[in-house]
Image 1 (cartoon, each protein chain N blue to C red):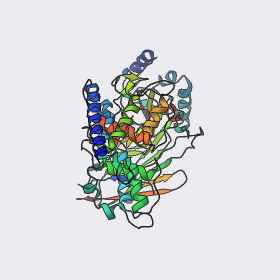
Image 2 (image 1 turned 30 degrees about the horizontal axis):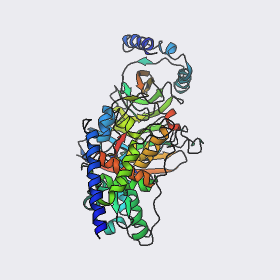
Image 3 (image 1 turned 120 degrees about the horizontal axis):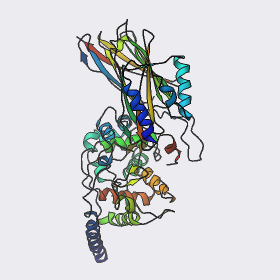
Image 4 (image 1 turned 45 degrees about the vertical axis):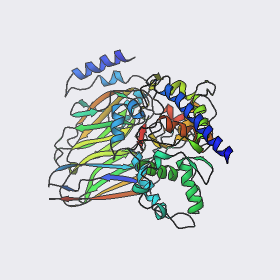
Length: 157
Length: 262
Length: 106
């Protein structure tokens, strides 16, 4: 499972910051990933996000999918003229890909936040940020999940 | 009177022999290890973070309940027990314990309910209810850092013996005992999960799987169901006995309430 | 009233960007859990979290069931004026929970 997809991700990373992320389309070929693409299109319109400016801090291996720590830091001066307006976090194989929408204001001072989320399976976590000048940027990271969040909640006890 | 002395001596001797036999088996491992040591670093950090540890929400709620008048008496826990940081400092290290009033071994939840029904004239708190978990978490938290130290001799000996038998008895469709996993294979893997020693020094725990606090009895029921055995009811003497054995088995481990476990 | 925890620094220098933490006790039922009868427990989540400071909204989150139970957020605000930092959580059924802490700006 992993080696082919990891090779693709490494290739995408090597394209460097500021590159148009056309590679995003073939990565989202199956199941929840197709739904993720359509949710992203509904949220941001038919734009092609640029890669960069966002740093995602996630554990490479999460022992419990129920509580995966996430930290998102976005490079922005957060002034009235130049700030991050909103960030959407997606998990492309969760039953509901959209995890949260964070809305910043210049009063926030820094476009950085942390939270914990639920992941159903090993998958990519994708952050897409919209800036005050209308540009859209993205970054993603793969998280391996030992015990997924959704199926383990079926037990009675 | 003589019969009573003989019986007490016999019970003490039996317990000493039993303890000696069991401690040989336990020392074959490297000694008790807390479930904390089997966690991933992120989870360990979360447990240590007194702000982000979700269990602290229950500790705070427990503090509110501690000071709240309950039942027809209009008394709160604080009315009799004052400042919990003082009066409850060692409570969690000593329970389950033999109750003279109940005439059998009871655990912390049952002691709280005895206080509520007899002293406060309030209703007993159901198992796994929000209020019960909040109070037991708050009280156990007062003992954080102190080593577990339950009494297994004298009147508690019978309960201890039953609890130990439970721990080693195979059960369920999978025909496994607690010891099969937790004594024979700690550190091993089961479906990608690391098997711990199954110690109880962190209880009540915030379990990631439940996304909520849980008592030892909930954990025992979960484990029993996992081997396809019918769980005993929460608050049953079987589980109280097992809890007593477990607390003895992990003696010396510090109370970590509220611990975070997978 | 659900239990909340907030952490706001007591003091800060004017213009300093400080870390704020906020947490609320809530199961964030995602609709996939089943009860003892096997019936799925319906979705029940906090939908919005807002931090207001100095007369305006500083930070807002639109929550989804994909966030963990007892949702916790760590974020930043630029200290400009002494005064309260207000927190508001809104449940999907409209219930509002509030919390507040003061910051002194020198």
